[in-house]
Amino acid sequence: MVREVSESCVESLMAEIVSSYCRGIYANKPELAAPRIESIGFQVGHRLTERYTMDRPRFTDHLEAIKFICKDFWSELFKKQIDNLKTNHRGTFVLQDNRFRWLAHMSVDPSVETSGSIQDPSAMAENKAAQAIGLHLYFPCGIIRGALSNLGIPCAVSADISNLPACSFVIRIKA
Figure 1 (tube, rainbow, N blue to C red):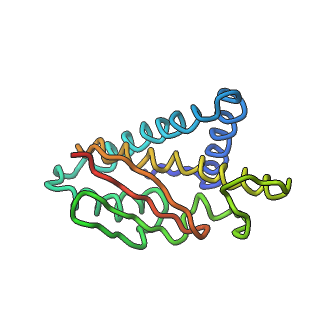
Figure 2 (figure 1 turned 45 degrees about the horizontal axis):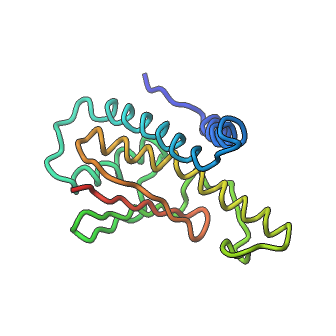
């Protein structure tokens, strides 16, 4: 019996987690929300990898584990594989998802500059929207980091959004 959770439920849960940590628990210190959201993702990724690799032999190298994340793990989570995997063969991997499902319903005006001082109130709202999208990416970064940690690969994971809903996850293996 396969257990699945409705995608809309997962999206709603993520929105509530981000909202709860940013506006409620850490309203006075929003910089503390991001590490907490990432740690929740880490726990989820760690547990999911345990489930998905139960009947598999251990991976012999980093590239094999990253390919597992790109193909099997991503397919279980998002019903599709990663669109592109790049590496510099020195411990840095870039996973590109051209239609990241958790960002598919979000948008930000690309004409709004996100740095410097913002005088226009509508531009400030757009900047806050971009920050909110960034906060939503800490959870999947945590999932990837937790999955790789469970596979014995300590790493740092960051995300880059340049053109929604496309998203790149940069994995840096710790030596």
